[in-house]
Amino acid sequence: MRYMTAGESHGKQLTTIIEGVPSHLPVSNDQINESLIRRQGGYGRGRRMQIEKDLVEITAGIRHGYTLGSPISLIINNDDFKHWRNIMGEAPLEEGAEVKRTISRPRPGHADLNGAMKYGHRDMRNVLERSSARETAARVAAGAVAKILLKELGISVIGYVKEIGGIKAEELIDMPFSERVKTSEASPVRTLDQRVEKDMMDAIDQAKKEGDSIGGVAEVYVEGMPPGVGSYVHYDRKLDSRIAGSVVSINAFKGVEFGIGFDAARKRGSEVHDEIDWSEDRGFYRRTNRLGGFEGGMTTGMPIVVKGVMKPIPTLYKPLESVDIETKETFAASIERSDSCAVPAASVVMEHIVAFELAKALTEQFPADHFPRMKAAVDAYREEVRCF
Image (cartoon, rainbow, N blue to C red):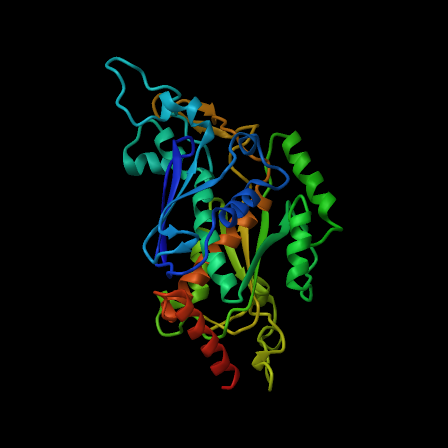
């Protein structure tokens, strides 16, 4: 499985093309739209979420509710494009017409300056329109299809918030999966720890009042992955490595942890590694899950626990200084619409990014042209490793 996205932040639409999804997988608009709506929620979002109502249109690869095995094409129209047609339209400008709303002042923390240098753009709108986090809507659409495949295989994925602005949620290791879903969906900041919910919201409000932004940590929790998915044979087949790379590819994400993560550096080996046990009904399992469901680049069969660190959004209402690329004069960086905190929404994005990597790994390891055959192969493998 793989996917590609196209589209600009204020362009006509976002497009996602997914290749490698097995045939005969039940997929509907409503399932994808549910994910897109969740991405738009969360305390701290800006006015853009009131303008855009992300809904998907399936244009290829699905017939009568089932995948065909051919590439799937998904479109998310930008409702705000009607106000940007003269700025972002594809048609050539009339002779003598000026390009409107050009940007020559790169914003600190964004792709503006680096992208302008790389592609030779004097108008940095050509960079920021594509580098915008708006593109994550297209990636969530791809992840939503992956989540459907995982669910049909008995694998459940949920993302939520662990930390905002230094305010940390308690580790709730024994919370059942269904409770994680229920609690995070009911929380404005998508946290499992209701005791810190108000503190997180107050921190977001304070940052907004001061014209600033705050970041945090999102966590994705996965149940049902069979052991041995991934590989120790080559570096590019290690599944935890692939997940880490995909998480850092999310806008503003700067770090990844599995299980106890960086805390392992401060512990002894006896406090880090998970002892192995066996029972007749479960087969081999780990007594603890400090390594977050991975050993040697492969799943262990324990829940996958991965955290992603999101920096504060760099678009500030008390802007940092920058230098105009035309005049070389110092200015306060330009302001685009922004959120004071996007960690709750980013946890949904991360959930879908991780889901796609898991689904991709499964389609590589098991026969994946025809979903019923794939499911039968995964079920047979589960029984084989249980009896190992």
